[in-house]
Length: 240
Image (tube, rainbow, N blue to C red; front, side):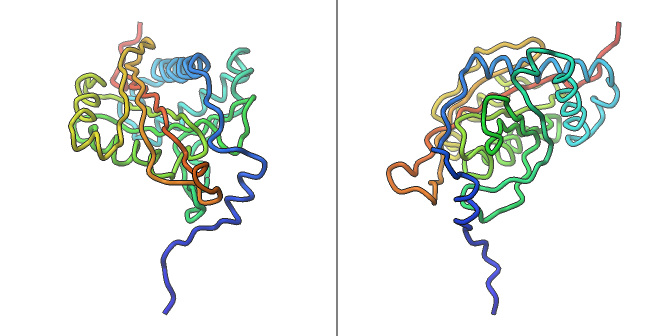
């Protein structure tokens, strides 16, 4: 009888990480704030140009438009072009031990001054009357904690397309402050003091539950990951 269990692929991890020390050095908070501001501005511009589509489209439709605008900015915005080489959507990647070869984070932001083997990753979710903070965490945040996404990095983005007026302070912060959820999502810190107009922004820090299978203790611990939460308004906007 053939086993269907997924087995680690140390050869794949060895090839991917060749010459790299993991986790990679942290990206400076100032640089991350500039990139976050670019993502927020791109979404604001897309929402202005496509208000009906943004207010009614599904997650893939919104993320595809955002990706296209972010790539266009590389040609149109000199500063953005200096920082960002390309932005991908749903690009296949490995998980931390190579047992999965087809992980597809929503957005991968390849930075010009950083290896493309571990791009800055963003996962996007819709927040509305039927989809809330539970799915945002279980199908978003969790993927950064168990080694599916950004396992060689120390930071990532979570994007929420908000359609019901929810805010981080009223939905995400109380949810992650519950003792059970704080434990499940290994919350070490949650700050809501960041503001990027017109975006509701926060940063959380979480411990991670996996270890690098290609490294020996104690160097095999990935350490914590910082998640930047960008909650953008995806409701209909009245054009001037």
